[in-house]
Length: 278
Image (cartoon, rainbow, N blue to C red; front, side, top):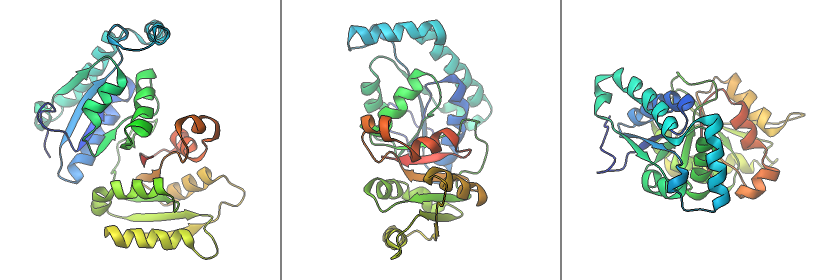
């Protein structure tokens, strides 16, 4: 695995370190994702510095109020940097890995750091920087995002990947974007919840797997009295899934605030990493 200088070349997997509480999990899972494809890993702290932002005065005021509960932008960076340095000391090969620090406007930071990476590891839970970064990656950057679970992560990422499948564009984009990781996964299972009597979901999944050259078991289940999110998570747990791959958020950002169900349920409750793309 390589740890390139991010100023010279984009990394295959970028660990986005916005919240110190999630930074260690992001680094661990990013390293494993990069190593699994013999790729490169990068790390960056993407925070918000109100003084350097180009935005409405009201938004700057809101950002400055955060400092009461979360500390200043400099303090937040120092906390993340401390976690990063401790993680880097644990392995000699990590010691050449730099951590970029980019403040100011979040969208411009995202475009500069994350645009050319194949996967960005970013938490859903965390401070305002982390949450803003997550939604920007999903809806604006349209990235394949690997989300560590709330309780941390120390498992084998690609031991058993379960794909929560629907024959919809966002699910197909997620599977296609994750192809090089699915290729090296020990086991891949495709889950079709509430498929039609003519097996539309299973047939579409079979065709896509043949197209991208991935061998997978295809399983159909009925949700019954459970929600789709509960059904997916029950299956993933029963099959000891190490990672759950899905098309994230069927609707736009604002509609998801009102209608979002399955993706949000999995983000809040999944005990395993989620790999997702809008």
